[in-house]
Length: 451
Image (cartoon, rainbow, N blue to C red; front, top):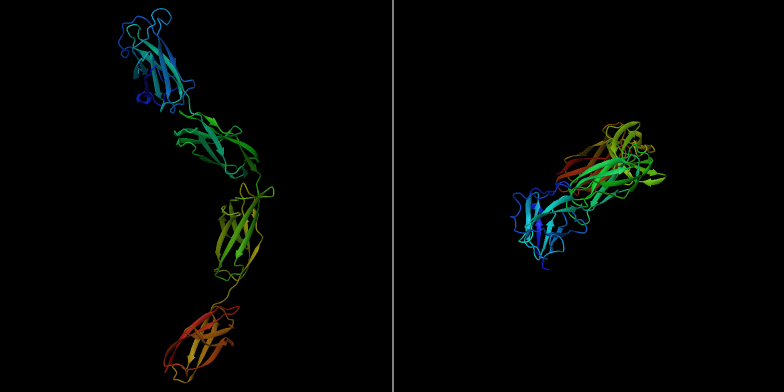
């Protein structure tokens, strides 16, 4: 048997859209004005239709309708066995979609469901009639189902501490179909809605994320499911339960390191606080919150913890400019959160010292000098902000090369230097003071004229 087939795009009919509600999409044909011209036949033909064994997926699979006109007389086995001829026209909402001529009594329609929502629709096949058989209408009910989906709920960590922000990801898979997904994903636990996130033309398998506060939630294990609402093309689905455990508030330990531990007035000091957390005596990463740095009961800074480190840490850089020399007891205080208890470090003594700067008074005599006379290099070192007498060594140099040195005596040193080997000219001489335990180093330069 030769069969003629036609692929029909139902979207070509303006009244059939993805928003057509179930049960009302197709209607009976109204013959007035749209029925084929009457034929001369006097008998009613009988037809058999062949529909899919399983409803196709709306918007994704085609719908096949096979129609066979039976060679009978008035739907009985009596009388002439004449195979009906003529045409079958498929109608929806009084609009003709396509017409096929019966080929040995058979017509096959293949309907595209692109853009059509899931639901049950009634379409009409109108038989034109022929010389033997009368025209008639054949209503057919067709059902389109939504594509099956699989909802999945995922978390980056199955164990959290009460007060943490719990991260949940929800995914919807559609079994290989690629149509955008609409609707919502709702996370629930114990009958409570935790979060509901709309999906607006999202790609399949594209995740959405919810960040949920666990502050005030009793410790325990909670089963969380992701519920997908479905849309006009996709069926609803519910994920398997995801077990999430909330632990009681964690204990924390705060440690403090200081560098340098004995800075001078004006130096920069780096204070590093580390906060480690533990639950049931087991290490647990990710402490968040703030740390206060306190010196002699005075807050010198408050910083947030950086949880990218393990353990979490906060680093304060402080200047000692303006501080009086002495010892300061520095403490780092973790202020705690809903998830983590507060804690403080041990006191860390930091000794700030003050070393006065110095000034060199540098004199060369005689100056100028005529060779081969001897000259005297005299350097006097004094504190700029103090009254102590500096001690230590002064080195005299020319062009970076040492030419003489001496030890301070009551803050002064004098060194003789022969000029016999010097050529006539002008020389720049430098005096460098090395400093001592209580005084800073310094230098001074002057010129010597040799004639």
